[in-house]
Each structure stands twice: as structure tokens, then as C-alpha cells.
Image 1 (cartoon, rainbow, N blue to C red):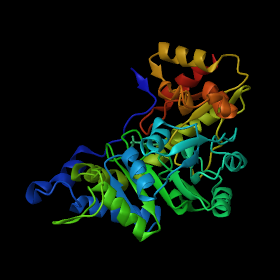
Image 2: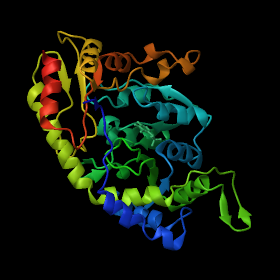
Image 3: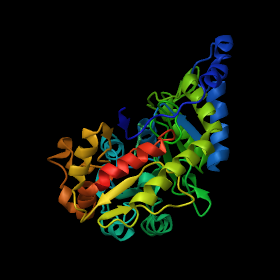
Length: 360
Ligand SMILES: *Cc1c(COP(=O)(O)O)cnc(C)c1O
């Protein structure tokens, strides 16, 4: 049977049906419906933050945050991420300036951030990649020193904490993705969280055409609202969040038991505060290359992902614009990384088989 890198978790069918049942009474399917408001309130608690603005997906949430925060000119960001982070900046007219990453956590290296700041820089847009927290204190200090805004792409970090604090605690704002492949999902969906009520208001205008009332439209907003069916999925999945992460933690433990200490392989250290979103393995001096292992797994119907390869400045659409050699560590890591299958229902026997193939 085919094994993919991820498999969406689903609540019990009956639980979802019960959650959406009253939509057939109210006929209220979107625009600040009861489910969305309930989910925002629940997420405020889970994330320990005063403002949660839900969106139809994480990418539009990120674009809305860039606009609502008024970012312009240049933003220092990471090349080692999903297309969304870089594309969001470019699509909003902000020039991404790529800083290199740390070789251990794959997050932005603070010293490299500082090196890339120019008079045009207005913001830092870091990513808590794989749920590994960035150097949040160092980034806050750099931002303060240079009067920059900080917008975190926390798409991978839902359910993870750092010294007991969630990813919502850091930066001027943080974006979470609730895409079907994420640890917590609403099928498609996302949110921006922030401390400023004023920013939250601006985000809500971005989300719904800039409309403030039946006869009032105050800004040129778009449409990126979360609908009630998405929110209902979120309410169900949120009830199972701890269980979801614990199941993932067990899968990770099997991988770690088999692969830790093998010459030429590096795993991110196991961390009690981790959300176990991904299992990246770095192949550096292993007897097979990353690409060979990828192909051997694929030959057995097991589909790992070269996540993140290539780095975003190497995308074809940016061929005339960026040079991937500007961030050599990110480039090397992208050539050596393989993200192994990891999801709540992945059987221990399958994890053992994946490790057998990898180590053979
Ligand atoms: C998933 C993801 C996003 C945005 O995701 P959507 O699919 O639009 O919800 C943004 N950044 C990163 C790093 C991601 O992995």
C-alpha cells in the first residue's frame, strides 16, 4: 500500500456531522458565522493570544498580514521555506532579501539577518520551519534596533511551544496555516494572530473587501474568509489536538530510535515542546545520497518529500531575480534533506520498514 509523506487527520465522521447539523437550521454559511466565531475564541485560548483572525487559507492570511502591517520596500526573509512565504512578499510588492539559515535548526541565522538590512528594509519575515522555533529573542532585538516589523510564518508551528509560550507570542504578528496536511487543519484555512487590536481590525478589512457596514467600504480589501464548514472541521480537530500530537510523537520516537547516531544522518533533536509536524533527515556523508534514498523508497511505494528543495530563490519564476548561491547553507541543506512519512495513523511496522529500506 502506498505511503505518502503526510495523511490528513479526520475527526470521527459522526462528530463532524453533528457539528454541521445546525447549519441546516440557520442557513448561515460564512461571514462571521457562529462556528468561525467559536473557533476564533477557542484558538485565542489554545494560542494564548488576544486576537485571532481566521482566513480561508494560510497564504491569503500571510498576504493580508503583509498589507495590513503596511510592509514595503524590502523584507529580510528565509529562502528555506514553502513557496508561500516568498510569493506572498513578491505578490504584495515587497522585495524579499534572503538571509542564510542556521545549519542545525534550518531557521534564519540572526547574524545573517543583520547583514542583509538596508535603508529600504521594513520587516523581517522568518519561518519556524518544521516547528523549530527561530531565535525569537535575537530577532526581536534586531527588529527593535533597526525599527523593523516582524511577521512570523508560523505555518508549521501550531501546537509547538518554546519555554511554555506558543508561536503567537513572538513578532508583531504570526500566520498559522490550517491546510489539510498540517498538524491541526480546517481542510484549507489559516489565521493571523497579533497583540494589536488595531492590526486585527485592519486584517478583518483585508479579509472582507474593506467593508465596515452595509453602506460603508473603507479600503480595497479582498475576500479570504473562512466558511462555516471549514470552521466546523477546525472545532472537531481541535478537540483531538493533543491526541494527534501524541500519536505523531510515538511515530517520531520510532524513527529516532532507528536513525539517531547513524553516521551521515542528522535528525532534529526530539523536543518535548515540539508538535511533531515533520521528520526531516539530513544526508551528509551517508553512504547513499538523499536522491538515492528518495528513489529507493519511491520504488517501494513510499513517498518521502524533498522538503524544501529547491530553495525559493532557485524557482524558475525567479530565475532573473535571485541568486540561490547567496545563501549557501540553505542551498546545501535543500540538497541533503528528506522529509520522511509522518502522520498520526502511520503504523510502527511501516516506520520500521521505511528505516530498513533507508539503512539497507
Ligand atoms: C503550508 C504553508 C503555508 C501556507 O499554507 P496554505 O496552504 O496556504 O494554508 C505558508 N508557509 C509555509 C512554510 C507552509 O508550510
